[in-house]
Image (cartoon, rainbow, N blue to C red; front, top):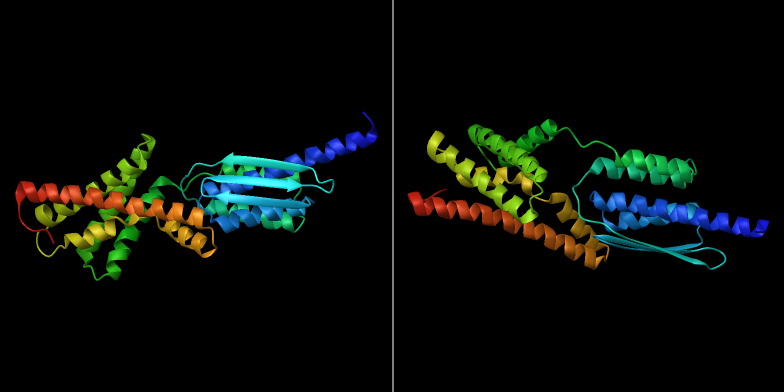
Length: 271
């Protein structure tokens, strides 16, 4: 093999590495809740910085398609299916920092791969902190709706309990449908327990349920769907919007099943 062929082979290998790096960064962003425009911008920034002549990235809510070409007009392509996963804003922030460092010329391909691996291995927030945060978030939400102190306290307990239940159900790999139906049902059961069995006087079940479903609401996914639609990424925006709306439906089903069952068995009007 001549020296010229060796150089060409090295260039092709380097281009493959850059594409893999860009695809890996895009996958991490998409998997952890980034909007489509951010993923496309990151892929484009990485490829252009490492001297890829042209690059086109087509990103959907669960897949990335990349084509790139060099000065010799040789075309390279990568495709990767990406399953929907949980939100982790810390990981998104770290990938954004890495892409800016790459654009500034502070990181080469090898170092960028190392940092991406470190980012992928970032631990999740401590479960206890997540549970406490869910309870406090639920209580603060209904406080803004005019809830009393005891309604806030009961909602905080329910919000923390339902998030702890979600973590347990996640270990058993239950489907999103079943998880949210059970979560909605658990919230309603706890609310009925507070209003009819423990306190009885002055507790509003509707407020407790409204606040306690706070940890179940896919807020980031819903906002990202709106942003994708605003950026004319209609396919991804509609898919994410539908996914979020279905979660609302599942929660409502869980709440409705428990309320109707309670009314059938014990009668009376719940407020």
